Every structure is written in C-alpha cells, then in structure tokens.
Length: 267
Length: 267
Image (cartoon, rainbow over the protein chains, first blue to last red):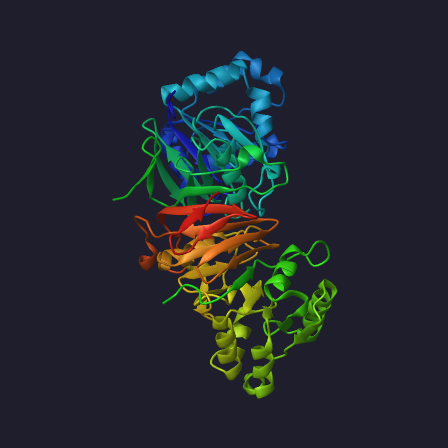
C-alpha cells in the first residue's frame, strides 16, 4: 500500500482568509491557478451555504474563474451523476471544516467518493482544513479532549477517507493542546505516524510521500516506531498512558519531511 | 556539578488536597512523617496567610504534629536568624504556588537561602508545587503562553533556585498545553532536559538522580540531546521554532527515569 497516491494539502484549521492567504493561494496554484476549476466540499459543516459562499468568494478574489460549491447533505446527494461530473471536471477539491464524521458518513462508498478517489489518483490536488484535514487519513481522530494528559479515555477514532495511509492527522494542534491525544493515537499502533498541524499551517504531501510545511505556525511529527515500551493495551479508559522513546520533530514553514524514510529533510 | 544534591518532590500544581492526598502524604512520609517538622514557604504567593493556613491544616490533618508557616514578604524577612533556625530545624520544606520570581527575588542570596541549600544537602526533602516547582531548576521558566506553537517569543526564563541542575521544569503541563514553550526552552540548550509535569502529578528525585512519578496524570520528559537541527539561534521573537529528533517519554504513576543516563527505567 502506498502512503499517498496523489497530492494532498492538509490544513490545521483557521488558515488566513483576509491577509496574504498564503495557504489558500498555494492551493489555487496547485489546482492549475486561474484557469483551474475548484470544487468546494462543505460536507463537514451544517452551514454549507454560508461556508461554501465564504470560500467561493476567497477563491474568486484570488482570481479563479470557475468555482463550484458542491453541497452534499445526505447520502442520496452523493449518488447523482451531476455531482460525480463536478468532481471529475475539477482541478482542485477543497474540504471545509465542520465534523469529520459528516464527511465519511455522507460520502463513504458513494459514487462521489469513487470519483474523488479516481481524480485524486490522477493527480488532482485534494485540500482539507480542520475536519477536512482530520478526515484525510485511513484512521481518523473524531474526538477527545485537548489540554489533557495522554490517556485512552480522551481519544475516539473512526475510519477516514483513506487518502493518506499509515499516518493520523490532528489539527488546531498547539492551539488546543492536543499532544496527549495524538500520542494516545500513535501508542495504539506506533507504525502509524502522528502529524499534528497548527492553525494557519498546512502540509503539502506529494506522490513521492514528501511532506512540506506551508504556513505561519508549526507542524509536530510524532514518530513512535522506535518506542521501547507502552502500556496502552492494558489501560482502563481513564488511566494515563505510558510510552517511551517517541521521536518528535517541530517543523515550520519551508521545512520538509520524508514520510517513507521517516526523516526530516534539511538543506 | 551534580544534577541533584538531595531529595526533591516537584509537583505540577493542583495536587489533590481533599481526597487521598497521595502526593502530599508522600511528602509527609519523606519528611519523617508525624514526628517531623514541616515548614511551609508561601513565598511565591501574595496571599501567604490564606495559602499557608490551607496547607498547614492539610498537613495537620495528615497527622504531622509540628507545622510552621514561614512568611517572607521582603528580603529583610530573609535575613532573620529566627527564620534561618526554622529552616534548619525542618525535616521537610514545602514551597506553595504563586509567582516563581517572588521566590528567587525575595530569597536569592539571603541567609535563609543559604540555610535552605544547607539542609537540602543534608537530605531534608524540598517540595514545591506550581511556581514552587518551576523555581527548583538552575534556569527556570517564568512566563510564556501555553497553547501556542513553539517559538521564542512565548518564552521567558530567569535564574532559579538551582536545586536541580541540567534540567528545566514546567508545570500544569498538559492542562495548559505547554509543550511548545518547553520545547523552546530545550532548543536553546539541548543539554538541558525538559520535565513537563501535569497537575496532581509529581516527580520525586533522589540524590542518585533517579526520578519517580507519583500522581494521577503523567510526566513528559523532553530530551533534545540527540537533536540533529534547530533554528533557535536565528529566530526573531515571533518566528516559529524548528527542532528535529527530540526524544519524548510519557510516564505515569510509578514509572521511573534515570536523569544521569537519560533513560526510562522499566521493570
């Protein structure tokens, strides 16, 4: 199984929408720029009109001529050929924030989902912010308190969209003190790499599984592969976690990481 | 220079005061139990009467017969022979929370400070919670936002009491999302070990520099010694930090760590 089959832009939420719009402009650039066709997927939010309109205006301001908001409010909406065609004509797809379970429960296994997987493999960039970021991985975090000691009781996981394999993404990372829950996720299977993305920060991952940080804050890579010990399998829900020898990297804008070799790429 | 010259009980704040009082009972035990003499140092707080009285009642409830609250509100107070005698007669000394700069600026270099260092080297246990914990190390964290990406602008440091060398302590660790500021501290000199202590959790460190976790949450050990790269020396105040290859251990109650060898001690 490949870790990545295309191009992903995974955003930690609260990306700049009024200033330089560094991250959103990067997305537009990857989606063939002004001549591209961007499809906004407000599936995660319960306010798809408002959120879809907000992003639509931003992308138009950046100069994209064709922007479509594809509303999918129930699984039935994800069966339509029109929706499939919208996806298959896109040069870039953008998932907004909201609730990551809405994305997977409304889209999972539908024709629209198939179209998404198809264009992703063909190289169309898939972006997601906040819930749209969390949903990218094979197994996703759907809940769990921040600002808590690492423990099993604070973590809930579910099957994600599977665009990024052998990794789990957490967002609003430093801002919501989420190290504990990401460590708890990694402890369950240290083969899985933890990627904690701060607000207004993103990772661009290409087909070669090279990750690049874009944005104003940092990305925290949590690598438990060489962990010498964890008590995770013996824990009752409220008991605190033990895990030793976890390797952590803090990467700001411009820094790169090789997901296959599990190594920071320094100049 | 030795890392530790005596026995320290360093508490991450908000230790249980109404239930089993696990940590405070451990302190009493280390301070020769009911027959000991405990001196409470409310130096860090601006409400020394209230806070001193609170701890005094708890220790008396646990069964300690001799408990004294030693109020030092100005440097002049720290010159008195009576205060020195109080310290030198103690079997355990307890620093409350408040502001760690009050502890060092009021006590540093005074006769009471000398007495503290003397009894510490003789084996009298020194405990501190919250600000009292932060003040233990040679260089201490005095400020910096939690819930922030690692960056230099969020960190302020000052010379601490110097009871614990080659380490820096942060408290209320998970509860206030303080990984970023502890990483920033460690990045400045990766020889310094970062010890992040959660609320209602403590580390007991003995003369052999063996650390043991006591309490309901966890301790995060941040070891940057093998870090391959950091940009910390080039950063402007608001720029985010880069640091790679930081080793992290999460240790709950009963787990041990060897500060000299920098290794978790597993059974």
